[in-house]
Image 1: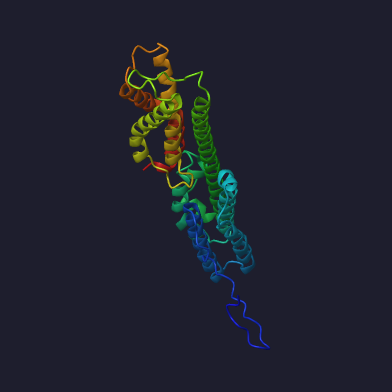
Image 2 (image 1 turned 45 degrees about the vertical axis):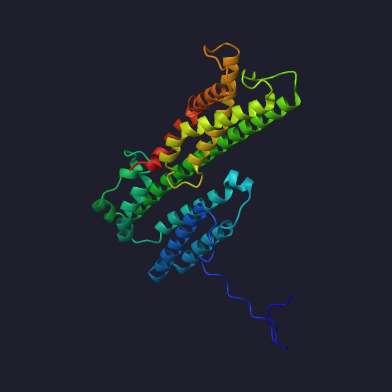
Amino acid sequence: MIDQETQPGTTPETPPPAPPGSTVPTAVWQVRVRTKLDDLYQQLSALEAGSASPDRVATLRAQLSGVESVLGRSGVVEWLRGGNLEYAWQTIHSVERAMVGLRTPEELLGLLPAYQGAAAQFLKADDKVLTDFDASADAAAPARFQAKVQALLLRYHAASDEFHESVRRLRNRMLGLSVFALVAEVLMVLVQWRSRDVQLLKPPTDAPGVPAWRLLFFVLIAGALGAFISALPSMITSRSGGLPYKLPFQQGLLKLAIGPLVAVVGIMLVIGGLVETTVNSTAALLGVAIVFGAGQQAVTAFADRRASELLTPVTKG
C-alpha cells in the first residue's frame, strides 16, 4: 500500500534526521539517561559558543550520539546483563570528565560543589579526592585544579559503576532464587499428583478424601499468604534509591517464592512429630502453614540486609 504518491520526475523527500532528545524512553533508567543526554548536549552547545574548540565539542557530541541507540527496547538477556545501561552511563561519565578540559577555572570553581555533592553519595567523607580543594590555591594553578576535578570525577564514576554492578548482581541472584523456588513448588505439586504411594502431607481428620496434591497446593497458597503478610511492611517502606533494578520488588518476589517452601517444610516437621503441636483440622493445617510462611523472614533476611547495605549510600538523607 502506497501512503503518498510521487509526482513524475521528482523524488520523495528524505525526512531530516531526528534531533537529540527525540527518542521516547521506555523505561525509568532510559528517562534518566535521556534527561542527562539533553543536559550534556546543552552544555556542549554553550561551550562551543564560548571559547571551546569546535572539533573537541564535535567529538564529544558524536560520542554521546552513540548512546541514542541503546534507548530502545531490550530483551530479557540484556535486562539481566545490563550492558546497555552500563554503556550509556559509562559513556556519559567519560564525556563529563572530558568536558572538564573545556571549562575555565571559574566555571569549574562554580561547578565544584555539585561535583562534590554527587560524589559524596559513593565516596567516604574523608576521601582525599573529595576534600583536597582550596579556592585560592586552585585559582592560582588552573592546570592542577583541572586535574584534581578530573580525579574527583574519575573516582566518583568508578565507585558509581561498581555500586550499580553490585546491585545488579544482587537483583539477578534474588531473581534466580525466586525462579528456582517457584519451579520447585510446581514440581512438588506435579510429583504429588502423579505419585499416590508417597504423601508429603497427611490429610487432617476432617478431610480424609482430599487428594494429597490438592492439600499440598492449598498449603503452598497459605504459605504464600503468610509470606505476603510478613513482607508487606518492609515492601511498603523500602526505597529503591532511584535505581533501575527495582530491588524492593525483587525482595518481595523472593519472600513470596520462599514462603510456601518454608510452610511445607514446617508442616512436614509438625506431622513428623519434631514440633510439639498438632494439626487435626484443615483450618489448623492452613493456619500453621500461614505461620510458617511468615517465618520466611528468617530465611530471606540475608537478602534484606544486603539490599539495605547497598542502598544506604543512595537513600540517605
